[in-house]
Length: 263
Length: 147
Image (tube, rainbow over all chains, first blue to last red; front, side, top):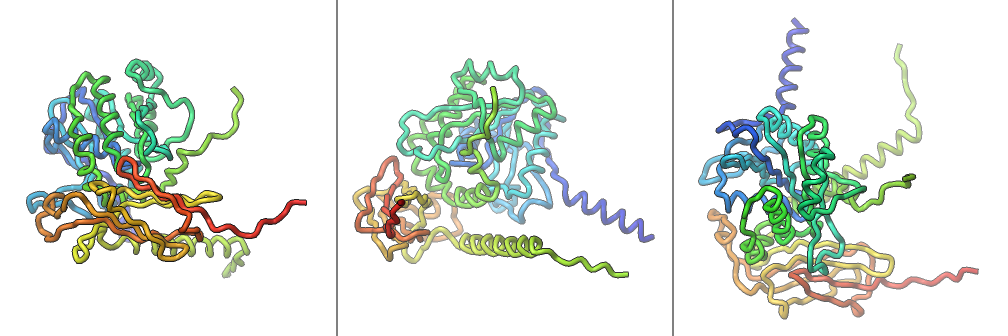
């Protein structure tokens, strides 16, 4: 009897630990998945918000888990998950309206990558920023990249993306590249030079323009630049929450120079 | 038989450090648990950052929609400065997509505590791309001669 109860407890605990992707609609095979989770300068988060707006993407799925903080986002008086997946045709994006707590970043990203693998997603892009201390003095932002598989290096180099040859990556991009490499799923991280602590719509526009080149799209970014101040004002609170999680995950590790090695 | 394990000095130190870390986290979180706006003074709290260098402290703040001529920086004490700036246009909750709250905002305002004392009279400030940067020289101590 005791054993049965203990088994029930164990099953209950496992279900509590689970990340579920609840689908309203099955996405097509060979979809391109674009992740823009809150990170430095909210570069990815602003970029996917802009894509959702410009491409008129609709919610196709959401992330559900008891491990997430007890937060919903209300839309027209109705509850929505703060971490959602939007799409139209083969363009699918992952967006979060909350800073993802350090404790759940790994399970959430593993959940999303596993789901993408089951749905036979063609490749995953992850958009973000590469923090530079003197960002406010830089006129022309550079764009960097890293990939899950060496066959993808050519794609990013052909599209004027500098490869990060050696250095640390921390947070959502790091995990997406890692889990995709494990599953032999193609993944490309596109990172524009950005502010660390301040929302950076200009960096988001650079990332979208690069994505336009790679995917043959034509998403207009002029609005992001023109309404940059509005975006910075609107993103202030999300940035504040994200800063806390960035500090907890030791994001500053990205500034570190890897130890000595012999070529 | 009860085996009593004595805690080593290292265990005690680790526990002590963990306690301090928890306390710091808790204090930080409590600071976060308030709105970033104040309807009473019609002000928004800007995003700020403090960087300490060997000879200076650099304070930056993100001030979108601000009139550059209205930025005021004042020293409250040798380890705290106050930044205020008026916005070119009023912003209300509805502009930010929130309809269940009332109030409008006309300025940014914050007090930034500095981790080390500075000489505020020698501070320099610039405003570029909507980012305010204040460079404050650190207070000099006594110089020790190397023999």
